[in-house]
Length: 603
Ligand code: HEM
Image (cartoon, rainbow, N blue to C red; front, top):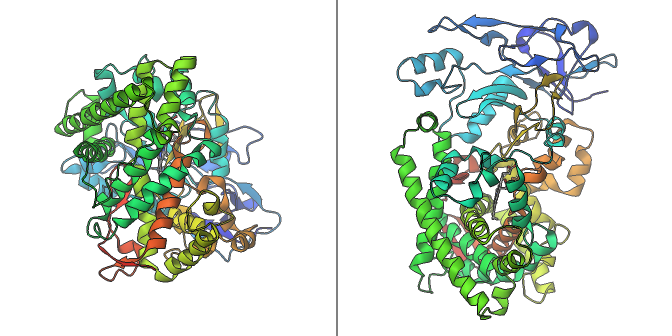
């Protein structure tokens, strides 16, 4: 019997409850007649095995005030009303959360506001939450409050996107990804255009190569993740990352007023040790900076921010579809050209050293040195493809990692007690390890509190609420009792449940103790246990297309945070009561605007 449950569909006044797995429970006599909108072309399942029959649903629609066409009747919106005291009798049967359809119009989808004038009227009428560059967390939370844990929205450039919060349902999608799954990078259309215009091998063929779902992706992906993704490979790079982080940490005070730039420099320096075995020291104020490295960091951050904002900017998407080259695209193109040029120069210089046997020991142990050897010995990818893979990785390795670190640093700075507790754990391990950071002392077993801090940071402020967008590439699928044809798009919202006060106590409080083994054990069998599912744990997506840089990015994050906490006590220079007061903006990911901080040296 379910003790904790979630009450839904207040307008229907029926006692519906959401079980631990996200399915709504209701007593059999109550099944008929609650409202669901089915004004998309989704097929409601009549399958006998389905846990609820299509007869249970009725369709309600209302006329749009402007077009007179059918829109969604908002009076029956499934704003899921959460009630932790509700319980269900034993005769209850499970019915899934019903698919809610977000009102939309052709071309603009749910983004009415981009139509001058009437867009605002439609927006006010339908009350669809508005998304902009500075409200991703609030936007997804509002969508969840308004449309519940399973809704379909028409997104320009993507089509119908079905968002869900139940990891077990999302797992079903992953299981039907097939051998050639869809990747999030297939949405990066401006990047694909840029690469095609420059005839990059990485995007060759009808299917956009690495960005598609064919043999090229499989080949390139296999080549790319070798020497990068396995725990053993990632561990091998830690000594170089530690060296870079020790130097970088010394620069923190110098950059106290511009920590966003500083953390980008730190991520670049750490990643260069992995890729080339080189200590670039861009984050070190006492070493003259190589202007080429600074130029690379600036253009890497700029190119990806412009890339993502073009995708989120619905007018850009529509213009892109019409073949219009916008000023934003031109800016992105110019920044990408710089990234590409500098990457090629770096790879060429490294290749000359490699060919003439002049690599240092650190360089020989680097990812790129191994990649040259593999490329030469098995030829699985061409030399050009290999260079392009390295360029792509170099570009992906700067502000993704720095964003992940930034949020954790924000939380540590706002919570001196937590910072102190982390220091004590790390200092103990550090002394025990002879005064040296190592991969062994940063494991979850040895540094559980540090890992809990990262997990809590991901709960409160993930780098993005939805990092997993998948499709059932192999065959039709039934999700939450509804059948969908092959190649339907699903997105997993891994944020909204974790900040739902009916799932988590004091959700606005940053509290790493939520993730101790004891707390996890205590949650078992309650509705909050869902947050311990693998899909809620980190921001790298899942399945065969899970981020190939995930392991090295986590290691970089653990190392730099540890070094900063060991070296400094840091806090904002002005009082900030909550992380919710820290503003953020959509760049490649959701980046906090780092507050100015005071750094006081430890020791
Ligand atoms: C904290 C830092 C990072 C985060 C949060 C992150 C996140 C992600 C996510 C969510 C995806 C999409 C996965 C999917 O399609 O399901 C992805 C893909 C990818 N990431 Fe990362 N990433 C990070 C760092 C890196 C680094 C350091 C590299 C450098 C190697 C990298 C390279 C890539 C590549 C090449 C893909 C495309 C993989 C494919 O489509 O098969 N990422 N990343």
